[in-house]
Amino acid sequence: MTILSAQDLVLPAAALGAENPLAPLSSRQELHQVQNLDDLPADLRENIGYGRLHSPLPCLNQDGYDRDLTDRTFPALVLENDHLRATVLPGVGGRLYSLVHTASGAELLYRNPVFQPANLALRNAWWAGGVEWNVGSTGHWTGTCEPMHAARVDGPDGTPVLRLWELERTRNLVTQLDFWLPGDSEFLYVGVRLQNPSDAEIPAYWWSNIAVEQSPSTRVLVPADQAWRFGYAGSGRPGATGRYLDLVGVPEFEGIDLTYPMRHRRAVDFFFEPLAGERPWIASVDADGHGLAQASTERLQGRKLFVWGEGAGGRRWQEWLSPGLRGHGYAEIQAGLARTQLEHLKLPAATNWHWLEAYGRVSVDPAAAHADDWTAARTAGAQSLRPVLDQLRDREQEWLTVADAVPAEQLAVGSGWGALELARTGWTVSAGTPFAEDTMTARERAWLPLLDGRLPAADAVPDGTLVSWRELLEKAAENWLVWYHRGVARHHAGDTDGAAAAWLEAGDNPWALRNLGLVTGDLAYYERAVALAPDLVELVVEAVEVAMAVDVDRAGYLLANCPDDPRIRLLRIRHALRTGDPRTAHELLADGFQLPTVREGANPLADLWVETEEALGTNRPVPPRYQFGMGGH
Image (tube, rainbow, N blue to C red; front, side):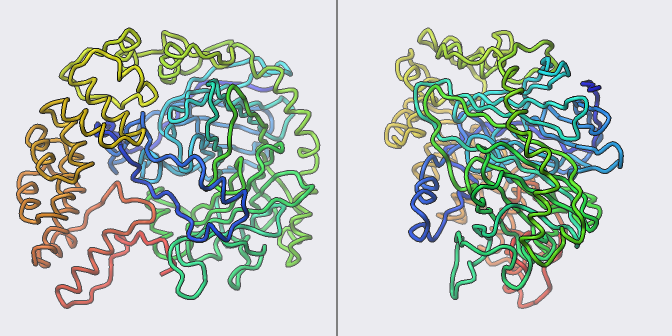
């Protein structure tokens, strides 16, 4: 018997905070440039060059979170039978937070004991643990900390199916997740469907990121003998810098067995080359051969291992993402549409793609799972999964009989953006993923007048520009808000000159002035914007960063009356070093502070510490709390 229930999950959690009102004209995330594109196979090279997302618009960035943990309640939807208990969090991207094997009591995933956002996603805020669904573009998706619609659907076997759906806004892609746990099943099935309702081809991207606990004996099994290695340091070539994709053998790599996550010193990605004729799956097993397996039907062909590495920076990142980290932390096994996460595929107009994933406990003979003979180890893993692999295609066909079923009971409400887009486009989407008009809040309804050629101006902060509504914006009756959004939409389309002209028409307001400062580099625009909105930390930070590059004295003036914020303190340290005052820089660093928005791959606090020590002529080591380097030191 399968039960679907609504429960409350209480976690120590940091506040997500308000969205950053400044238009994200470009992405702050690294775009993972590949230095050796010319050396790669033609299809891989083409997919890497196609569909890159240069901005998360129409979404705004989420960088207002902190690191103060207090108990908060997260609505949870739980599917359980006699074998498994799956906990899904619809309010934060539909995360599969927990998957418990009932008979043994074992948690099959890495279950983060806290909710702590950090700067790893396309919109900045991301949190670790469980299974995260990444859709839209390279990187952690724009909805990873956003709510999804959720409902109960009657399953093909009479058991309840938990359905989640939402509009992925950067691509206008309808994303559907159906969690199905048949009464006698030892595996949770997740049916995924991507609907492109538009009349244009769009870049498609999907990776299921699965966090699993690791120990020195943890081994990852996967049907592959080769992998594309993508690391955070040189490729191993003499004098190499940047990031390279190199095809390496499995399991031997740089003198270690790469399939054991804790044997790596540095953070690294391994994208496994599928073996011809093998069905796609990946598993993480412990010393006794027990662990989590994920398998899928053929469309989800890619498989990956990611490790943070056992160097100081890698351990620091795990503690940063999971304060109070216990044990040995986690690794990620992942599954995606393409061979690597650097690629996008072409999803044709008015086309749906679907596949079925399976998650459950695997038990492999430990001698075979940890055999030195890699072929024997991966073959043993495949044999242990044979029952689920053999029935996946039939299960997928069963699921498809209800994929369009109208939800029987609404369990959670996501955003109204889907309903707004349907009001504009009239697109036809599945009845199984409805976007009802009453899901629109005041935020979405504020855009409805634009369908009639007007967008009333108000004193409120401008929302994220609906860049796909550019044609309507260009025709709308003019006021400062229309000019502002026209400029953002033009910039998004590559028309920088037209954008600047629009923002000049928008007049004397901090939002248009900031955009002018960003695209022109003219500090005067920023200074006027700060004068109009002096308490907006995100604006002040940008203004000071520009000033530091052109006039350090003006940067000091801007810093003189800044609000108290870790990002401002970081700039004060940089300013002290630039003005020949390393002692003040040391005092600010020695006090100890946390920079909640430190980026993946960045190590600013350690860099500033070293620069300060060199200026003072001392050699005090970098405190561990400041070490976020992704290398092996």
